[in-house]
Amino acid sequence: GQQVMQIPQYQHVQEGEDFTTYCNSSTTLSNIQWYKQRPGGHPVFLIQLVKSGEVKKQKRLTFQFGEAKKNSSLHITATQTTDVGTYFCAAFSNSGYALNFGKGTSLLVTP
Amino acid sequence: GAVVSQHPSRVICKSGTSVKIECRSLDFQATTMFWYRQFPKKSLMLMATSNEGSKATYEQGVEKDKFLINHASLTLSTLTVTSAHPEDSSFYICSARPAQVSGNTIYFGEGSWLTVV
Image 1 (spheres, each protein chain N blue to C red):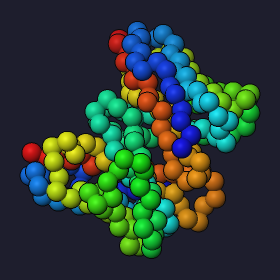
Image 2 (cartoon, chains in turn brown, red):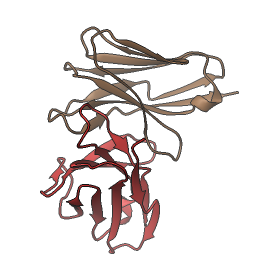
Image 3 (tube, rainbow over the protein chains, first blue to last red):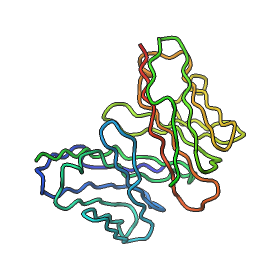
């Protein structure tokens, strides 16, 4: 399937600081999805990006899809303790049916 | 919104026994469901794609005789871990893709924690 590489693996920030996680692929992606998984929970869908250069915002979260559709990022402005969790990017496999997940970025926010 | 339910949420079984995990789409039909495994602090690894009325498609390295998948109806897929061993202890998550909806929306179940002792 289409492999997506995600960095960093871990990020520890003070509350109020910004946070960014990056997702890269060696091949062009048809679309990319982002998920959040709280500790002990299951992945929750955040957003899907489809268009080249697309930028979408959800309150303090900004999602970007690269012009070449090979990379994506999730940026959180002024983190809060409720942002704690692991953020995964995911892309569909070559069959177009199953999602392949990046390794995820675990975010820890301390007050 | 669409809901995918998994049961049981937690199960402990003895080594050598088999355990079945159910994945149900509660308010939509799913011709395709997916089974993932997630080890602590690791990513979700796709195990197999479950197709209603046909054999599941397994990812490379996943033993189909050990992880039996049955997708007998449009709302239910089951994963049976046969002859479980402690190394099978993991978080198993299913997801489903609505048959009637176009696009790439996939809904995840709440996951099932399996502990083999």
